[in-house]
Amino acid sequence: MSQGIEVVGLYVRDQDEALAFYVEKLGFRVHTDVRNGDYRWLTVQHPDQPSFQLGLFTSLTKQEQDAMLRETLQEISNFKKDLQGIIDAWKTGDTQALQKLMLEAMRDYPQLHKKLLIDRNKQWVDKLQKLHASGKTVFVVVGAAHLIGKDSVIDLLSGKGLKARQL
Image (tube, rainbow, N blue to C red; front, side, top):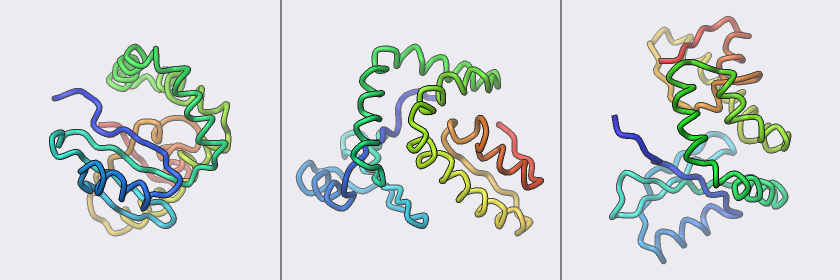
């Protein structure tokens, strides 16, 4: 199994404007462009680095963007250590450690936490219920932060009587 960063998210004011810049000016190509209600998952790739995607995300206010940037800059020196801690906690199923490493700082920004995790989790759970009702076996992949803590996908599915598990 290869380990590394495959997607890095960048929050932008206007996805179409950012897309035009990365594609027309810098030579990137669109990798994924999928809409889910008001949410749009848009990633681009540079032709020389096909294993790396740059996510162009929006819907954050200027204050939320500033808060996220400040938090990122404050925590960047711990990135390698924290990433290894997240990997180790995931492998052992240590949800307490995952919550501390992934969610603790985000809770200082409740609106951002709600917008990036909780609101999206609720949207996904509705869709997952429909998939479950179809009787088909479903395999779903989401970021680890969506699977831990209160209002996680796991928590919301459990509240609806459905069972999900970590593979």
